[in-house]
Length: 217
Image (tube, rainbow, N blue to C red; front, side, top):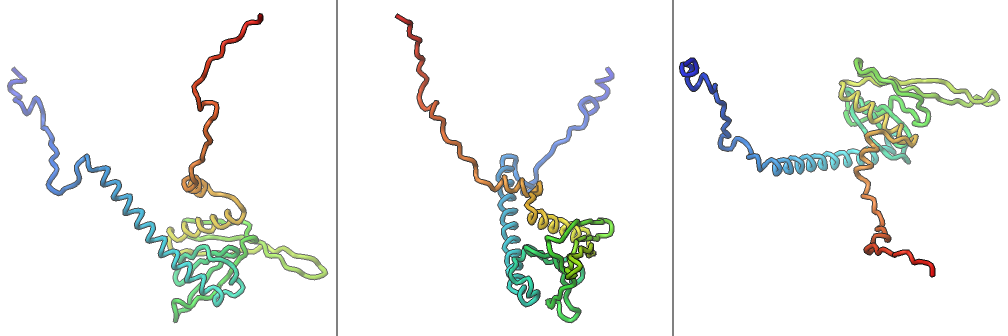
């Protein structure tokens, strides 16, 4: 009697139905096609970004002899903006901080540069977006021998994103110079490596033939 008084809505409850509006999204069977489309778009965007980056590095490479004549024989690895009119230049042998003059945004001069082989450690403070590069500079004092003087440079970034990018790029450059592969680099190398070719086993080329042991005469 109580169920009869509740009625159908009270017994069954509110039934929620989801209706796909016209043009409101793909059907379930089209999810794979949508995923392929998104993957293709991501690959196209990545290829376009790599092309822009390659052109930027080529421009810096061509201007390197005039900007830093002592580094003309080195290859530009990366360049990234870290602050107001400041750029961090990474080459195969040096880390340099460049700054443009107030009158010309494209006219850069070197504030400091450090040889990669002299870098001892890189310390970062993310709360302050500050990167500290500690290195040891050797000075030849003639008859008194060679003096090793600990020195450092501080890089203040304008944002957390710039700080994280600078820390990653500098760490990757130092690891490459020392022959140490980072975890992300090892994974990318394994993904880009061609599949290993395993030669076929000759013992399984033909069917196995059972040979009965011969009895002595």
